[in-house]
Length: 68
Image 1: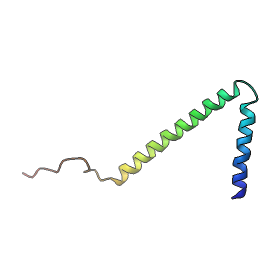
Image 2: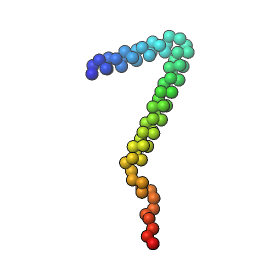
Image 3: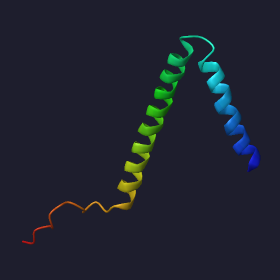
Image 4: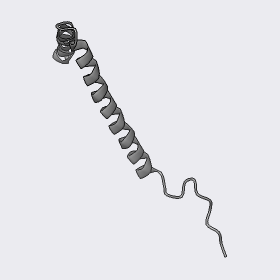
């Protein structure tokens, strides 16, 4: 577990060094972050919707059937 935490700390340092290397590097890192975060959020939204659809019965939100 300690090596995972150390790897995350090292990764932050590497990304900081890469972002400060050239003037456009920080823009490229920000755009990459937006793409990764946006696609991750979209996948999480779709997965949550599928899980809720799987759990909830089809009759939720519909009026009861009329008897004749």
